[in-house]
Each structure stands twice: as C-alpha cells, then as structure tokens.
Length: 409
Image (tube, rainbow, N blue to C red; front, side, top):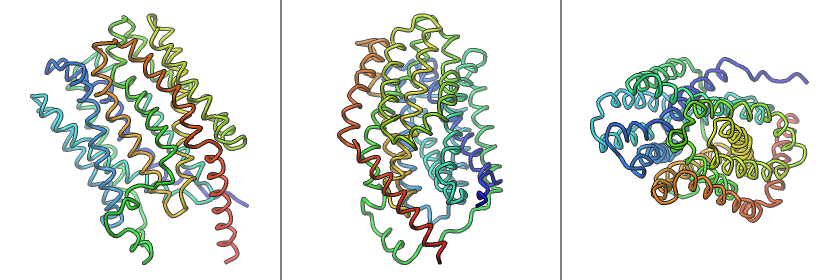
C-alpha cells in the first residue's frame, strides 16, 4: 500500500510557523534575565521571575486556547495569538521598569500559549492518520531545533550587540510566522452532538486529559530541572569564565539529540518505553552533575551532550506516552495537558531556584537538580511502571481496529 503524503505544504508551513514562535521563546528565556539585571538591577530571584513569568502567561493562554479553539476556529485562534505576540514584541522597546517588563512578559506568554496550542492542534489535522506518530515526531523537531538555535542566537546577540537588536530579531521572527499562518488552509472542524455536549460547562475534563497526567507529572519535574539551565547557564558560564563555550551549549545539545533520535525512537517502538525512558533520566542526571563541575569549556559541552540525550529523549518519549494513553478523540487534549503541566515546571523553576542561588551557588543548584532527577527514577516506575507500555499497546490496538473498521466500511 502506498504511503500517504506527509510533507505537504500545510505540514511544512505549520512546522515552520511553530519553529519561529519557539525560536523567540527559547531566545528570550536565556537572555531576558540578563536584561532584567542590566536594566533594572534585579536580584537572582527577580531575574528568574522575568524569565519564568512568560511560561505562566503561556499556561493561561493554553487553557484559554484549548477551551475556545473550536468556537473561534483553529486558524483564527492562531492568527489572533500571533498578532498579540507582535504587539508584545513591539512593547519590549518601550519597557522602562521591572513592573512593565513583568506585565509584558505575561502578555507575551499568554499570546504564545494561544498560538502554540493552535499549531499543536492544527498539525494533528494535516498529518495523515496512517503516519501520525512519524508526523508528530518530525513536528517536534521544529521545537528541538528552536531549543538549540534560539539560545545560541540569543547569547551571540548578547555578546556582540545589544538588547535592541535582540528585540528586533524576535519581532521579525513573529512577523514571519504570521505571514506563513495567513496562507494556511485549515479545514473547519465540526463536532458531533455528543462531543459538543461533552465540552459544555467548566468541568476539569474539558481542560485536562486525566489519563495523560501520570507521565506528565514526571515530565514536569524534568522540565523544572531543565529550566535552571535555561535561566542560569549564562550567569554560571560568566562566573566560571567559559562564556564562549556556553554559546555552543545548545548547539551541542541539539546535535547529540539528533544523532541519537533515530536509535532511541526505534528502541522506544520495538523494546517499549522503559528501554529509553530510564536511560534518558540517568543521562540527564549525569549531564547535570558534569555541568555543575564545568570549569573549562570542553567539560561544559560534554554536559550539553548528556543533557541533550537525556532531557530531549525523555520529553519526546513522555509526550508519546501521554498521547497514546488518551482515547483517539482526546489526543489533542492530551497534548495540551502535557504542555500545560510541563509549562508549569518551566515557569516556576527559575523563580524558586533563584531563591536558593545566593545560598548554594550555581554549582550547588545544578547538583541539587541532579539529585531531584534521581528521584524521578522510582517516581516514573510508581506512576507509570509497566502501565505505560500497556496503555500504549492498548491504544495502538484500538486505533488499528478502528482503521480496519473504516476500511471495511
């Protein structure tokens, strides 16, 4: 049987639009704390808040977007979110106080949450059903590349230019995303009477897919640990005089992840989730410990490779488990649940961690986060254990049966 076409114009367009949105997110996550310190003389906790408050806004945006997406329309919601992001990007040029910075970061995060939820939902609509897992995997690559390139560009601009150039770059990226989105062709989705009735009211089930929560709890903790790298790597590198090597940290992160992704993906599918999930946590732990002892550039880059393999592999696997745990008609909600909770981890991380930096230092912070990752090993087993594989297999069988049923019809 001939494979359905995956790389359509709309698939590439959604992935590209998402890439440029994510690029601005990661770029500012690693630099806005420095802007806060330089411009408003913020302490570590305030600098962390300037970074993390964006994710809190994104959390609210995802809740809003998930709730009203079908009422507003998927493409309309995406365009609205991006337009608000453009407004927020322009407002950065006039920020003259810490309070205004926090307010604009909230607005920017809210708009990003709306737009990101829309792209995550639209992509499931343009991917052929027979190539769902493959398509989502390639779409996730747009986030992986943004996670590597964004911080690299941000730190480069920080060293060579000024914050004005950084904000201009972000504005251009969001404008490109808007231009791409305007030409998307997104079929209108019509819910059945049962689905419409199910979505009425403010029930928890209308915002959260409970079957996706167990694996997402562990993923949220790993995101909490990773947020410390996003927010404090620049300060750590400066303190240890390895700033030049730090500018390549996320490039090495991405290369290590891209080189291992084909193997880890194959192991995940053939040997089950446990074959990659536990080793991924261990790699992340090793990376954090090595990072805490990085006093020369090469050691820092070795840490980047371990963290890329560990964090990148675990998060993609966790998202797959979260989606497979949900019924077929609630896959979009499961994806939203995954990102809402992991956004919380990314959001509260820098603020809480910033409170301890003056006491334990950056080295101590990374060691502490490494210890927290060790706790994720038994936690993953308790919450998921063999159930992750069973739930995955069960849903695959259901979807396979559904496909056979459709063919017979």
